Length: 274
Length: 324
Image (cartoon, rainbow over all chains, first blue to last red; front, side, top):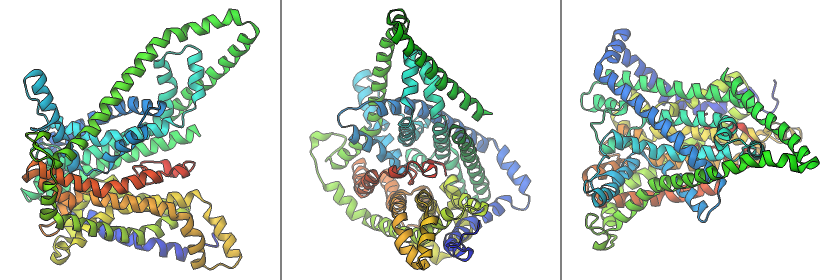
């Protein structure tokens, strides 16, 4: 449609600075990275890297960890988010404000929070020492990483659940209850279908963030074999740019695909609900 | 397929129960004795169950909140304790904060510079782009929008490697803070663009601008009197998000930094790895002190985690989509 107050010339002019920056400092560099990753024989290089048992194990471990984190986060956040949205109690606003703070923490700070809880001088270690006589220290392992990923995923998903649950039509639930539906039936037939689009989107973000999280693993231990750590080690210690490039492109492709798939799904679901 | 399934299930649950409940209300009005019993019985059955569910929910909520909040409190206390290993009984001190300020002041300042420069560039490039994308509804502009948000769909590590692959050889650029600023702009620009675009799309700028133009307002006049005042909440939300993200950015920065260009989170990683726990904690306190005001401002403005959710604009679907 012809837009009188917004001619093409201005559109191009307004978009040009952002596009120029994006092209110079992201698009071209990524193109160069793709070119680098291929080397002389792109197929052979990718095949060699992806069939290497160490890299494959690292990729699978990362996917498994991120998947587990996503499922756990969704489950916990759903329960807690629904509780927080439906109950009023003293200092609720303060609590909600505190819950949003971890969203702004860099990965390194999240790692430090896990050390505070489960590190050598951590709270869990001190408590277990007093209660059972043995000191539980799990910060510097996959379990610690799991705790760290939960730490930065849960606040985001709780907020998403609360935002979506706040818009639920309460009369549907009342009707179901008056008909004698059990809490489980109400959850399955009313609440979950209504929250599904928001939950799908949140799950995708949670999974993608966990896949690419680097700071947390970096703080906890440099020998945890998750993909971002493997890429970092290949790049800095082994100066193996080609492998680092291949692995980071694979990682980028996976996270992008998950986010795009979720967006297509939720876009359709939202359209269906409207 | 999935969409249709969900939709019908939802409809069935909704319409079905509504219809029957109306029928029941009619029944109760006409003959209360015969119908109240079957309705009341299942409710009584589920009453204790609901109580236990709520109790468990409350417990889990308390536990989860403790998991999130206790470490923050602990690290603040650890940064103020004389000797964390001996505990609070060793006394409170500001000594560690002083140590951090004297050892790491460069990295704190560097982060503030980088955040300011990042904000300036995202404002100059992102605000016009957000406005232009909101105003044009063509397929091409949707494609450009999709493209501009790519850097947040791909892990920072990949973007950083890419920037290094092409610009790592320019040593003057490589050794300056601008190298980090570039990385931060790449990562934060999508948030500014989306935030501005979401707000611009929620007001009918086209009609307003056409009205103004028909009265003889020039492009500059329309920008100053219509576009900017309307886009202002989006610009503000975007700016807060950009600064917060830039101050905390680690994934890209760790790859891009040199010993001369350490930012606050890089210094944090350094302190966690090589300093005693009190110093790491004191440094964390300083990070909290710098970012908390921004977070509180975002809370008060109703800016969500993605930087775009503005409570005043909830009717606009684009502002709610957390993935785009």
